[in-house]
Amino acid sequence: MGIERIDLPAELERVRAEFDRQLADALLRRTDLTHAQIEKQFGISNKVIRRVSRQFKIRRRRTGKRRAVATSTGSEEHRDRVDKVAEFSAERPSTPVKQPYL
Image (tube, rainbow, N blue to C red; front, side, top):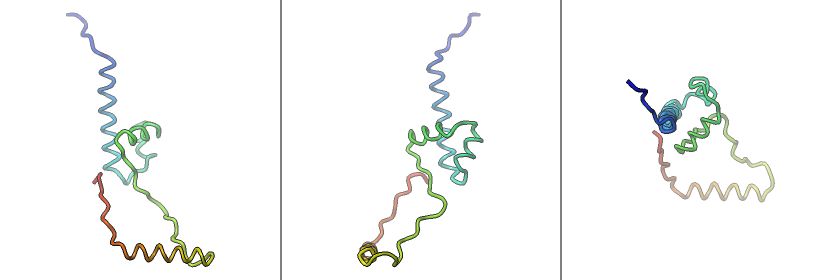
């Protein structure tokens, strides 16, 4: 009846990897939650979320206001550039964007 030896560094690495997978799963599946809400739910800091996001290559969808497209204000040269960009995008068919995390 001896004491069972455990490999503590390996056990910590295993537990951390499992936690990282759970957090990554929450980041991918719960896009409605903000990072602050996920921080509270898991009891972690934003630093951990950034580390896991980098590790699993997870990017959050942009939410909130978008920058307005340039209108006809500005110099004549600027308006010409905006028109050329609009013509170029109208000529090229848009290619579908691959959604890797759906």
